[in-house]
Image (cartoon, rainbow, N blue to C red; front, side, top):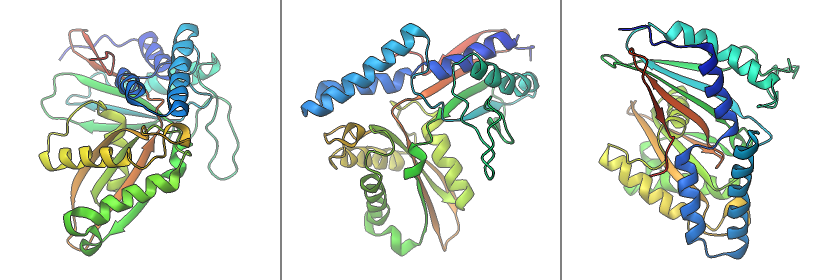
Length: 297
């Protein structure tokens, strides 16, 4: 393995880009949704959202007033280079906040004290994932909006509650979307974690919607069919952009699954607002960089 040639300056630029840009997969789906949308109010809302992205890009300003909660996924087979990312990422987060690219929104969970720089215990949340024989380090930075978090739910279901053709679980998803209304800043993307225990399902739901390209296909045929069915039916619920009505309620549904115990089926439903502040890069030992979510197809 090489030394990956990782510099603090480029890590800072990746963090800054995460705060000021919306990933290409979300933008592509949003533009296609605007073409299909039939409601005048919904079309106007989608147009305003896309105009906001353009203005933020031109002025290098935050896309949304809230930076959301930062999670960084680091996937590796060798620890070489990982220590540098672990050192650089939190520092870059603090510097980007100080330079006005992210609002300082991180507080002490109980006394609500705000250090003023988006630092704190467990922030950013860094998920280290060992991937045997992977030749590159993959880093995905995700600032997930926290208004959307208010609509999230978790339920430990039983086999009986899953229902025939998984109708129990599907209805849980639909009810959750309707109850959330405009709170998650729709059009949303939805991550669903299934299996394990509560902690596993919750992590799977966040990872699925934060690290997958929203235009991709699930490699598991059953899960792919379920994602497509849920997406189609959610967009028939009429919630619409910003909750004002329309046929663009959801941009993508992504499911992560693990095995579970015979007595239970944990299900976590995790909203992601349309502002997909994500940046992904693969770092190769010869210094090459491959960027994820960077191009519209």
